[in-house]
Length: 271
Image 1 (cartoon, helix red, strand yellow):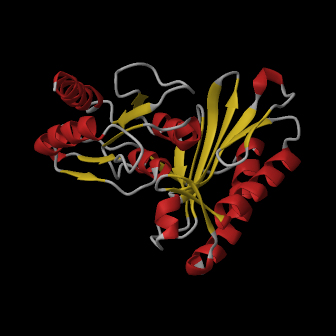
Image 2 (cartoon, rainbow, N blue to C red):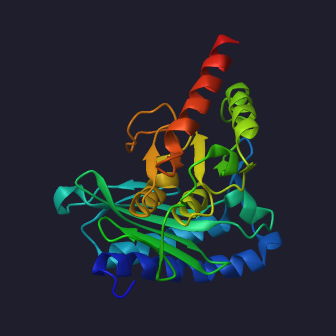
C-alpha cells in the first residue's frame, strides 16, 4: 500500500499506541487484575487501559465522530453522515488471559451507515491488517486476497464455539459435525476479528459464528469484502450492524458452506 488515507492513518496510529501497553500487559499477564463480566466472560485491566487509549487517540484526531466501544459503550458524535468508530480494544480476551498470543485490536470506521475502513492489529505477531472501501485489503502494506479454493473438501474453515452461559450448543454441534464431514479441517482460535482477517488473507477459506456483536466483526467485514470475499449472515440474510451471526467465505464456497449450515440448523430445530 503506497499511501494511506488520513482516516486510515488515524486508525493505525491509535492501534499502534494502544498496542504498546497491551504488549507490556501480556508480558505480565499473571499479575493482571481480572473482573468478571458474566459466566466465563472476563474483562482485564488491560482491556480497560486499551479502551481508554483508543478512545483518547480517536477522539483527539476526530473529535466530532461518534464511538461505539465494547468496554465503554456508545458516545454520540456530531459529524456528518453519523460518522463513528466501532472499536473492540481486545478481541480474544480469554486467549490473552491464558497467555495465548492470539488476540487483536479491532477498529472500523462507519459513515452513512456503511463500513468504510477497517484496521485489525495483532500486536504479538506484528501483523497489521487494513482495508478501505474501494482500495483493497492489505497485510503490513502487502496486498491480500481471499483464497482461490473452490471445493469444500480442500477448504480450511474457522468458527467460534459456544461457551458457558452463551450460545446454542446443540445447534453448533450439528453445524460443526456437518462441516467437519465435508471439509479439510476446522479451526477455533478465539478471535472473531482475526478469523475474518485470515479469511481476507487466504489463510482460511471460510468462517462462521453466531452470537457476535458489531464491534467483533465490523473491521473484518470490510477486509474480507476488499479482499474479494463474501460476507453475510449464516442464515443467508445481508450483514448489518444488528447481525448476530456471520458467514465469511470465498465467493465459490459461500453457497455450499451456507447450505451445510442451513441443513444442520434445520436438523437441530427438528430435534
